[in-house]
Length: 134
Image 1 (cartoon, rainbow, N blue to C red):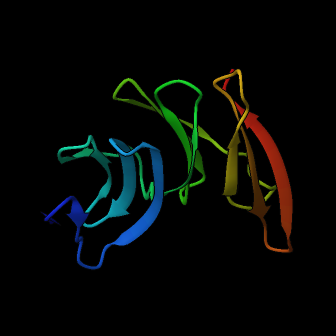
Image 2 (tube, rainbow, N blue to C red):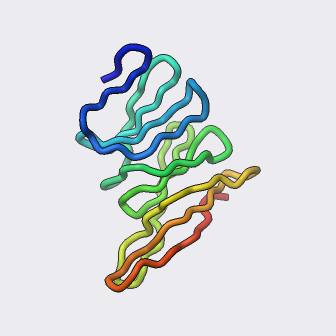
């Protein structure tokens, strides 16, 4: 629920990350009944559904244009640009799970990001550094 001057009360869902480009361009990832992205446009919050299974988004990084990149708990990297979602699977360790992204950093002058995280199998976690975008 949004009240007052843009105060967002969402009553107990899981929350992911927050990405602000300006005072009138803020996105918040959360899960109430489904994964959603709430976008503040300076006047109101607008909700959009995030595609995929369990895509609680965090962290966020600019794509150098008007979109952003985000990691997710479901082992994917998401890109949001021009009101359109795309996603790419993260690497997996043999016998393991997808990469859990811990941080993202935009590479200035590009629409790419560096991603830092880890992949896990039954024996250990392995740190991974990856580049996404062009």
